[in-house]
Image 1 (cartoon, helix red, strand yellow):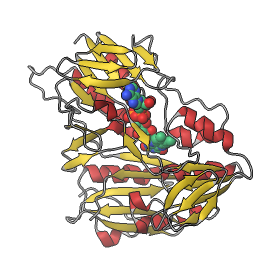
Image 2 (tube, rainbow, N blue to C red; image 1 turned 60 degrees about the vertical axis):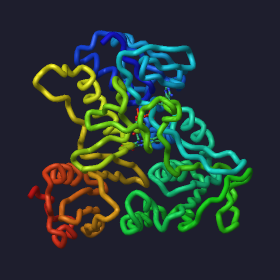
Image 3 (tube, rainbow, N blue to C red; image 1 turned 120 degrees about the vertical axis):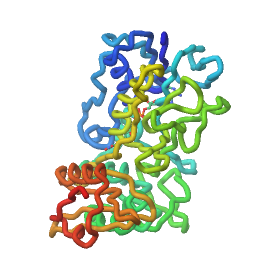
Image 4 (cartoon, helix red, strand yellow; image 1 turned 90 degrees about the horizontal axis):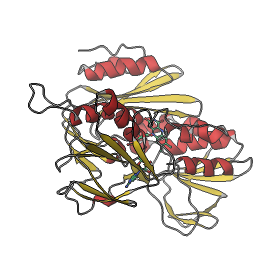
Amino acid sequence: MERIVIAGGGLAAARTCEQLRSKGYEGELVMLCAEPHPPYDRPPLTKAALVEQDHDPTLPTDYAKLSVDVRLGVSATSLDPASRTVRTTDGELSYDALVIATGASPVRLPGPGRQLTVRTLDDAARLRAELKPGQRVVLVGASWISAEVATAALRHGCSVTCVEAGPAPLAAALGPTVGARFLPWWAEVDLRLDAGVAEVTETGVRLAGGEHVDADVVVVGVGVRPDTAWLEGSGVDVERGVLVDEHLRASQPGVHALGDVAVRWSPRWNGRLRVEHWDDAREAARVVAAVLLHDPSGDTPPPVHDPVPYFWSDQFGHKIQYVGHHGPDDTVVVRDGGERWAAAWLAADGRLTAHLSVDSPRQMVDARMAIEAGARPDEAALRDLSAKLAPP
Ligand code: FAD
C-alpha cells in the first residue's frame, strides 16, 4: 500500500498514524485536519481547559518523526471510491486506503441569538473568556457536557441556569430513575426540568411555553451529529454515521471508519453501536491499523473491534464511570450503600449489560470484567452496593 489518507484530525486520526507506523507501515501517510490545530484531546475542553488559563490538550504525537504529512486547515469535501480519490479544500488526493475519522459536530438550536457549543479548542477558549463572576450562564440540556460546563461556571462565580427537556439530568442517556439520583449535585444550579427551549434570542432563551430566561451566555449541549455531509453521493453507506463492520470496514472497498463518526457492527451486542467516547476512538485505531495491514492470503482473520464501551465524566467534584451498553428495555437497579451509590442494568435474560459507578474506579473495573464474562448477578443482591459483581 503506497498511500493511506486519513480524513479527520482528532484522537482517532492521530492514534491511527501512531499505530500504522508502530505496526511497520512504511508508505505515505496523509492526515487531513479541518481545524488549524494538530489533534488534541477533547475531554479536557469542558474540564481543565475551562478552569486553567494555559491548559494545552495537544496530543504528544510526533508527526515529523512518524513521517506524517499533516495538512492543517484542509477538509475532505467529497469522495469517489471508484477512482480512490478524495477531494479536499486544497485539491484532489488519490489513496490506496482511506480512513474516515471526521468525528461529529454539535447540534445547534433555532434562533438569532449567539449560542456557544463546546467541541473544539477554540470553542473552549471562547467560553472560558466568558466565565466571570456574576455572568448569567444558561445551559441548554442537562447533558454530560452541560454538567461539566456547570461545574466550571459555578467555580468561576457565574449564576447558572439549566433548561432540560427531560424529567432529570442525564435522563436521555441514563433514564429518569438514575438521572434523579444526580439532582443533589445540581443544587447550586437553577435547574428547569421538563422545559424545552424554542429558540435562542439576542438576550437569552425562549422556552416552548413562551417564558423568556435572560442570559449573558447561552451554551447548548444537546448532542452531536457525525460529520458525514462530505460523503453524500459517494456510495459509502451512512446511517447516523458511517456504517462499518466489526473490522471497521465501510461499505466501499478501501474505506474504513472509526471514532465518533462510525456506527459499528458489534457481535457482542448483536447490533449497531455509535460510541462517542474517548476510549473507543483510541482503541479502534489499533484495530483499524491492523486491519489495513492485514494479509488476506494468510491464515489469520482480520482483527475485530468490539470492546465493552467505557466512558467517564468529571462533574460537581465527582467522577462518574460507565461501562457497557444498556438498551431501553433493560431493568435498571440502583445500588445503595449509605452515602454512596451506583447503578446496574440487566437484560431480560439477567445478563449485566451496563454499570455506572460514582467515585469508585474499583467498581468500574469489576463491572467491566463481569460484563465481559457475561455475568448474571442476582438482582436482589445487586441492590446492595457491597455485593460483589462476580462472573457467572
Ligand atoms: P474528533 O475528536 O471529533 O475529531 C475529528 C476531527 O476531524 C475534528 O478535528 C474535525 O474538525 C475534523 N474534521 C471534521 N470533518 C472533517 C473533514 N471533512 N475533513 C477533515 N477533517 C475533518 N469522552 C469520554 O469518554 N469522556 C469524557 O469525559 C469526554 N469528554 C468530552 C468533552 C468534550 C467537550 C467533547 C467534545 C468530547 C468528550 N468526550 C469524552 C468524547 C471524546 O472526546 C470523543 O469520543 C473523541 O474525541 C472522538 O475522537 P474522533 O477522533 O473520532 O473525533
